[in-house]
Image (cartoon, rainbow, N blue to C red):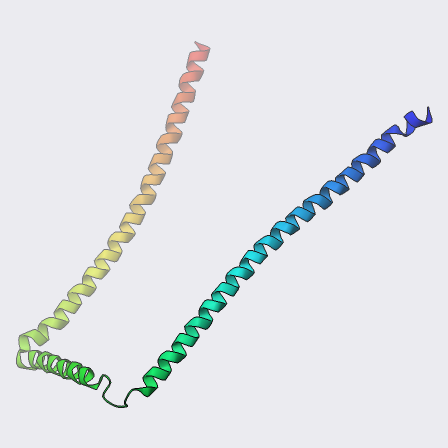
Length: 160
């Protein structure tokens, strides 16, 4: 009879023990998965480090190759040609502005028109936002009125 009285306590102890065992097993597997993920990350990092090392070595070899080249006219010719082209474009732009007074006057007017269009665009966007808000409110009111009329119709039908 004493065994029957202590049976709930024994079952409670077994359940507690099983809970602890399950918790330990769950912790073990979660730790194991975490370690596996970290191992994968470490391997990726090692691979990236090796790739970076090879890139650095390749860069140093390239630098050594460049240092062996004769100093001086590497790209001076192409830079000089580009500079001449820019100078000729600049001269053409100056000639356009100073030789043709109409062009020098129209550029500020075009800039003013562009600024005006930007302001109009900003106002239109604000108006669209306002209309969007108005539409939301209108739809909400229509839905509310529909629900009210539906409820009124149901109450009339139930009374009648």
